Image 1 (cartoon, one colour):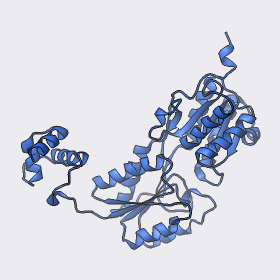
Image 2 (spheres, helix red, strand yellow):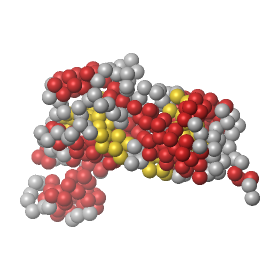
Image 3 (cartoon, one colour):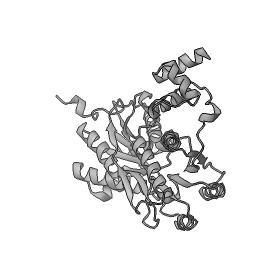
Image 4 (cartoon, one colour):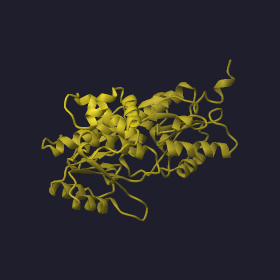
Length: 344
């Protein structure tokens, strides 16, 4: 017990006496200090004494499309932590191919009496999906917030990154390196974030390289799947059209782009520059480290929770979209265009 007290005290940066007071539920400890001690318990893997276990203020559902793309677990972690800090218990529900659909997961969560639901990259992002499902949920009195995707047909708060600005950042960076044939690899066109990225990409290439919109869309935009293999397929098509730089709509696609270049005997970034999107965990440690547009995951996750809790508390947010600015993170997968390096 003494060893445990010393460990917890060192981790929390307080005295052993303070740890003892917290563990025994004694008064005279500041709330922030108490939180530090409880956090130290959790970090060190000790079980909290029964009297210190927080009673849940309720369950909150979090529905994600999958967990293979590391951006989804990263967002789930931010949302889960923010909910836990507010006394709620997060329930993660994930769609899998051939498994439960978004509607089935929603029904399961509603049956379990969740206080609210956060949807990440759900059917609300698909322009071909029926938005009536969300109105039915609202009619049941279940508060919800929608992340990544927007529909004017749904009366709810939306949380999004600025996809258009993301493309402007990527294109501006590549043009500054001398690239004039820049391709865009992204997912199916029916998704709102895809349409916005195309819009931002076309506008940036028009403004900075003077190409016509029709030419850009027909020659420089390649639709595929949001997977490593999808990025690989799209990149092969774009390199065939003489692109020396590829902007990808996800980091997973960007890893596929690097693989495609290498399989053709090209090196990244000497022959082909690659830019990702998300700045997923571990992406800084790939070979080469990936230049990417960082999605503001902590800010978006916290905003989603804050907005949902306002809805739960009876002060609903207006039907609006909260848009968060991304930032360019330059690493080792982008360099001067091949022709530029030979100039004096």
